[in-house]
Image (cartoon, rainbow, N blue to C red):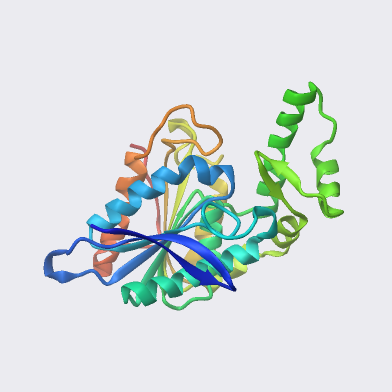
Length: 297
């Protein structure tokens, strides 16, 4: 298994990527490629190693995998505050073309975590070569997610000033007037919020015609298969199932994107259930899709 770092171009900017080459499978099958779509900001920092570990696992099983940094993040060109939802979707599109060019694959799957799952859906809905979507805890209410993230700024205010000097609504108003808001060191701009409010994810989901797996990551065992954190995942699943072939799973979360209490680069339940689904998709006649499958182990 070989891992090759490189840059590719998107609208004149360099995007950093790593291409994982597959180990040769029995029968020489290595014609499938996956692109990993990372979450936003600090969530990407806390979960980066999980993506690396799973990419290597897929490559061992015979798939090409491309991981990349959006413009304005990681080792790619640009500044975080100059990027938007639209530019990130453009980056995913460019990554699809680059993977097909370098690996020679025609079949592509997108895997995304949190907002990365949302971006994967937005890109996959308009690209016919995307036949698989794997969405780990995807964000459905994008505007609500960004608004909630502003709480990190309030926590910083409390730590620094011992009081809250600007509420989330006041921060948002500043943002609307052109002043970026610092969220854990990342500058959120009004373009992020404005584009989030304009996106109707249900339309994009119903435009997608391939297979999809939506995994809800519940906080505790009692939440697995329950109504709480699952609601967004189930809603997205129903939209996808209306026009394509979709699966829904609910499993207990084994890692955190909000904080890093313990180091877990290999969430076993998440990996095993995803790999089982990916392997089953190689033999679609043996798989029953379109029915939610809660997993409580």
